[in-house]
Every structure is written in structure tokens, then in C-alpha cells.
Image 1 (cartoon, rainbow, N blue to C red):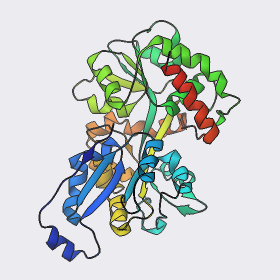
Image 2: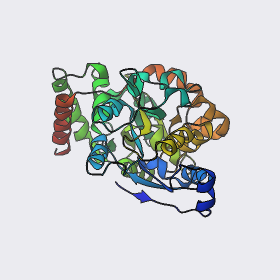
Image 3: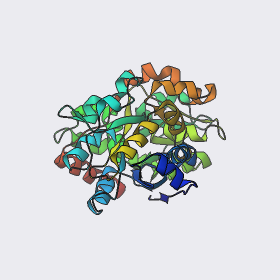
Image 4: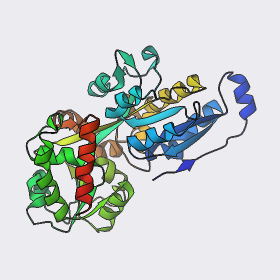
Length: 350
């Protein structure tokens, strides 16, 4: 899915004169949660700029867009946190001034220096996180069953399951179901995931992207989504409180997305302002409750800008337990990544 959103605001000349050095436009490669006008408009108004957004899915697609672009075409990149190092090695992210980033109030686990820094230099900031786990309609399934991933392939829910179409988190969940930690997925252990993955596919009705997974669960086309989580059900909670999610006893995966400045940006100061706006308490609260999908903000002070109902949907008070029970995405090298994608493609063909 790709989408470009642009907005033009008045008084550009006046504001740009008052803020020398800032350009009239900022170009950002983002995920769909950044396209909510409620998130972008406050920044546009403050700096008198137009933010051009292009949505992409999957790090490979984002890097391909950068590869096909001219230096300076893009200013900001939102990326899967585990792929920051990959983008740095590809020369696609600029170093950020660590002393000018608003990370002091982040959840300690979400500073994620191991992901956002390379050789002691900071290249990105965690902006949002959540869990790939099990989403379901609690009026259609037994919630107790959702606490054990083995039930998914027991035959009880055959034809009522959807799978989120992203190989890393789902293969990670399959590994947890087999007692294999995500960090221990290697060329040697990957073959152990083939049979349980194929069994899950046999029991499922569809494999779908973000929007289709949400739609399928909301309309009753499926009753369970493997790889779902708060990001899938929270945005639907107001209209359908029967939709829920849980982390089963085998565990779940913690996803996190980071934001950084694209190397070669002709307006790095404005790009850094955008990064700091997104990671500010106000920006974080708007990003957490974006109309595309919800997720936990990395900045704990965003809680002051969220309503009690919003915090309840996000399971704000349960985060200490959830953070302990969730593992990070697999971080494969190039060869393992190719093997994982090949296994996924084989599953899709079933």
C-alpha cells in the first residue's frame, strides 16, 4: 500500500521569514499511522510548511524507494526499529545529535540503544511500539483458548483464522510456539518452523495486510488474527468492543518503529524538528491513537495527554508485565532473511 498526502497552509512567506533556514516542504517516507491530519497539521502550522508523506510497507520497499531517488529527495524515514542498522549500513540515515533528542522520558526499554545506535552514534529514535500476538472476537471464540497458541492448530478454529501478512512477526510467533526464542532463529532452527507454519496456514482462511486484517476481524470474516495485537483492535474498539487481544503463555513479539533523518537531506534542521515533534508528549499521544492503527508511545509522558479510555484500550497499566513477556523481532542476516522469505512464500502458495 502506498499513499501520498500533502497539505498546503497559508502564511508560508511570513512564517518562513520568521524562521530562516527552514524549507517550504518536508518529504517523509512513513507508515500509515503518520498520515493522520491530527498528527501532521500541528507541525505544519507551527513551522509553516507542507509535509509530503509517502507510505510504504516493509523495509526493503522503503530502501528501494530511497535507492531510486535523488539525494535530497527525502528528509525523514520511519522504519522498523530492528532495521535501523540495515539502513545505516546502506548509508540511508544521518547521525542525530543525541543531546538534542527527547528521550529522557521514554520507557527505559524503549530507548533501544542497541537498535538505534551504531558504533556509539545515534541514527534514529523509537517512536511507537506494541505487540504482534493474537487478536480475536471474544464473542466468537473462548478467550481462554487464546492463551495457548497450540489451540490455533487443534482443529477447533479451522477456517476462522486470519494471518497478518508479515513474515518476521508471524515466524517469530511460530517459533515461540515451538519453544524457540526469536533470537535463536537461525539457518539450523528455521526448518523446525516449516511444519507448524504450514499447519497454521491450513487452519487459516486468509493471509492479509493491515487494513484487510482489521476489516476481516471487524466484519466477522475471521474470528482470530495471528500476528494481531493492540495495533489491530484498538482503533476498532469504540465501534466494536467485542474485539480483544492477548499475549498467550508462549509469549508475544514486541514491535517498535523508529524515526530518523535521511542522509543527504537538504534541510536536516527541519527534519530534526519533525523527529522531536513526533517524540514529544503531544506528538506521541496523537501518534499512539492515529486513525490507521494505535500503539503504545515510547514517551511515557504521553500518558498525560491520553484519556483514561485510550489508556485502557492500550493496556497502559499492564505494560511492565507485557514488556517482560514479549521478545523482539528476529534480526536475520541477509542469508537468513532470504530463507525466511522463501519459507513465507512457500506458505502463501499453499
